[in-house]
Image (tube, rainbow, N blue to C red; front, side, top):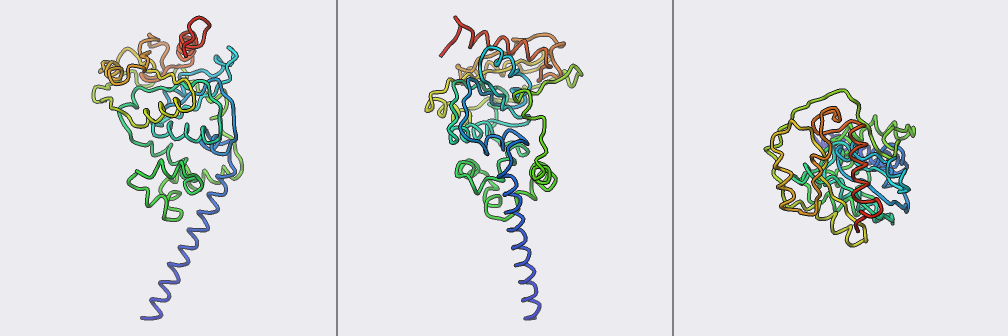
Length: 296
């Protein structure tokens, strides 16, 4: 029995050491990466200057054409991330501020995500390699139910979120394989192939969202003009009064839900194609950045 206990203890100790070693190796790889995605690009960066930073979900990533800002002489980057929520947008902004970014304007799509304070499992996982290296990331995740496991169990986060940060992604990161995420100033254009052109958002209920309010406070503290907008949807949507309800809670969020109309400008009901995105971005530039209409 004594030999069995010792043997079992040895196996457990070996597994623990292996997990610690793997954790260190994976983390070390991600700490050297800056060209795979928007999160590592910000985390492993130094001070940058931007006239316009775009934050939000795919409804930011697919809707704001970075080049149109650049054509106006505005240094811009679209940090919108498909599938993300305000949880991730707030955390990304915190990292930018910590890295001494100078940002004049932030545009954020604050519409559908106002209805929840949940994290996006796939996107938020990409912050986890840095959870032991960054107090900001640690604190941001500290209220999550699985924080203890994510923080204290070696290698757990890499096993739990294998798709976004597991072996395959670590291997590609180690080989410094770039993606197209950072091309075109972070803007991802959608084509004309139609997806779902019907949508029902009647179940969504806007709330006083703590992450949106974090973003507002950070912008105020750092003298950043925050431009919060609701971006267009196709005409065949049930529950469009949701956007009015958002404005009842946050009157400063500008409602552009119907700024682009016509299914020919949409790739799916909630996402415009490139032609629609260009129309919408042009409207935003006119309303907020053109001389004579510029608001501070």
